[in-house]
Image (tube, rainbow, N blue to C red):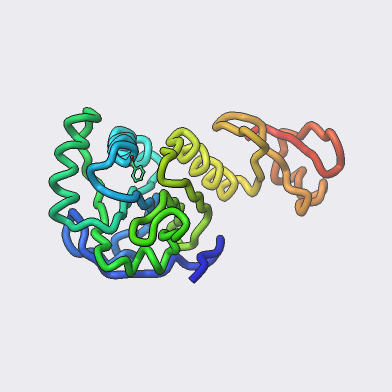
Length: 208
Ligand code: BEZ
């Protein structure tokens, strides 16, 4: 099943390093950073897990719960977490799904046979508190993800939601935002009383 932006993230029940999980119930009112990795005890994955653990406060500040997944067992995950903590100087506390039968990896199309028939690629699903899939990324096995970009993308989604705006290329928190063309100048005067810089009628920049 191809997962499209805007659809409800499929629910599932599964074992994790923090015990059995019912996904939607666990997500509750939080955003979720759901990400797969190919395998435990592999180098790139070890750095990614460590980075996620190191950024625990950044995720919490954005009301985001990280959730990892691979097709390894809970026992393997738990042994590997010791290595992750040791080598990456962190204290990994978020759950990691043990998807031994590949059910969830298949449900979320995390297995790309061109990369591997049995292991997940580096998929990312950013899911909002309404359980809608808001952003996806797919990285190959050999390339670790950029966690500054993951946090930036979450900031962008949350800023767009809170301010009915859009975000330009390379936007960072605090930078100029775009007033979407769907908002008339009349309406924009109410919504953005600070005014805007109109480069073109369709390109209006403002600060929030
Ligand atoms: C890694 O995490 O280093 C890795 C895992 C699977 C394939 C390639 C790299």
